[in-house]
Length: 100
Image 1 (cartoon, rainbow, N blue to C red):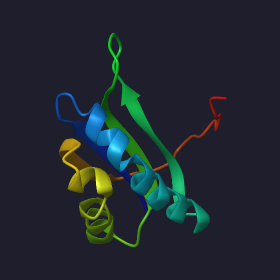
Image 2 (tube, rainbow, N blue to C red):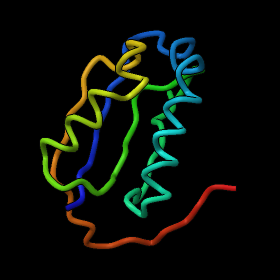
Image 3 (tube, one colour):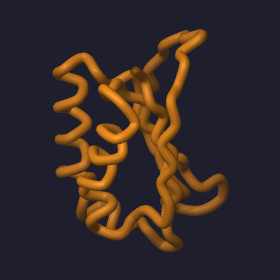
């Protein structure tokens, strides 16, 4: 089942994001290599450097598995996220495009 992971950053999260990013991206690559990652990316600030949060949509066996995966994320360990919400997701429409 697909789950959407909505993460909201703490204020001034950029330095912690930069430090934890390689490990965070490695975990996303693992999901992708298992064909479980649908999409992932940060929400940039509109008017300043940095990010306000992230969105990940990926396949997990159930809600508990998705929550466990999130709890073990390097961004969580680094204190990047102030709050994370995990919800089931139905991919009703997808026009997949990648920013160059």
